[in-house]
Amino acid sequence: MKVSVNDVTGLPKKPWNDFLKSSLPEWVNQYGITLEQAQHLAHLYGQRAEQVLALTVQNPEYKKPIHPERPEIGAQVVFAIQKEKALHLDDVMLRRLEIGYSAHRWGESAEKASCLMAEQLGWDEPLRQQELKNYRLQLYPQISQ
Image 1 (cartoon, rainbow, N blue to C red):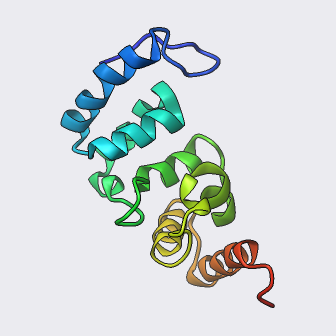
Image 2 (tube, rainbow, N blue to C red):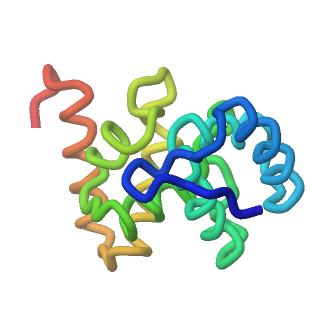
C-alpha cells in the first residue's frame, strides 16, 4: 500500500492513527515481521519504514532482529548505511537505532550490526574489530584502550 506522504518529513498526509491502523497489519502480512517490529519501524521512520522494509524483499536475512529481545532488524542497519550515509558502528547504534540506549546495546546486537556493516562497507575483520572497540569506548569511556 502506498500512502501519500509529505516529501520533506516522510510523514503520512493522513492522520497518524489512520496510517497506523492501515499500515501495521499490512506490513506484518506483506513482509513477515512481527507487530512489535512494525510498530517500532512506524514510530521511528514514519512512512519511510516502507523503504526499510523493501530491503527485506531484496534480502530476507535483513528481517532478522539484531537482538532477540528487541524490535530492531538488520534492514535498519543497511538503511542507515545506504540512505543515511552512516559509516561507523557507534553512529548506527547510538544515533540511528534505539538499541544503543537499551540494556542490549552490547554483545549480540553489536556483533550482528558490525557484521552487516562489514558486509555493506567492505570492512575486513581488523576494521570490524576496531569499530567494535570504538563503539565500546563510546559506551564505557572509563575502560581504557
